[in-house]
Length: 86
Image (cartoon, rainbow, N blue to C red; front, top):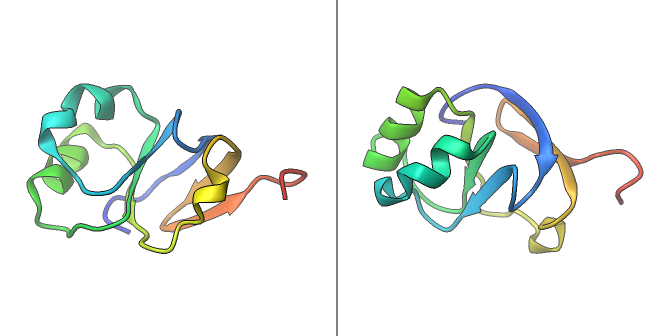
């Protein structure tokens, strides 16, 4: 976990799933409820930007791509499918 928070939404829409944290995607990050990256680090420019925006953020390399488009709960570094979505 890079920035804490708890958010529920659709993975890939409300909660962005990114390969890396790119500060060039600032506009997308502003509209997201949270961002999950598959790679990156705490000191990257993207991480710094998201902390400044106070967006929940984690690097989770093992996210199941089958969850994209489904409702998930992100809470302090952990991503789970919402009950009834399994």
